[in-house]
Image 1 (cartoon, helix red, strand yellow):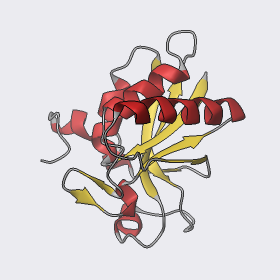
Image 2 (cartoon, rainbow, N blue to C red):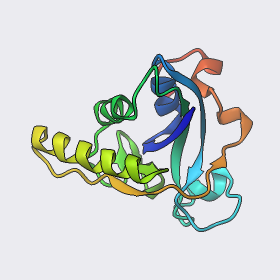
Image 3 (cartoon, rainbow, N blue to C red):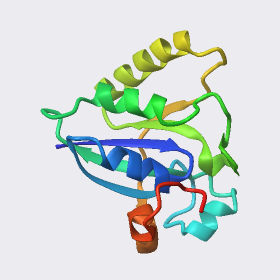
Image 4 (cartoon, rainbow, N blue to C red):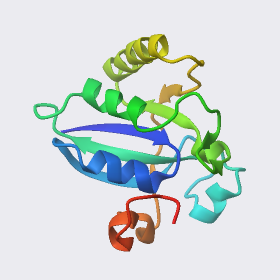
Length: 154
């Protein structure tokens, strides 16, 4: 098993989208990339901690490659909008890839280059080392499943 961590806006929708992929064994929403220890949702929403709403995925590389996860990441959100996805704005909604290994970093950078050739605007997605991932409060986990909806904006 390997881990991958992505930020692509509202983590509820990101989680639901990645959970649907064969080979994704588990996914948890949380916060990463900031400076506050043990942030809460309220802290992160203040837009003062530097954390992104993110998804940490556990995947089985024999069933889904990291490159396939990257392709899904680029397709499921707009990587050209800084600190915004849809109606959600703030640094916590930024687009980011948090790599866990040098191989993931190399793959992420190569993938960004390939996707940049397809898009008409510059990609603003950060590619940075994974840092401490703080699991979000339990009510955020599988939120859309619990609510029986398919959209973040309910």
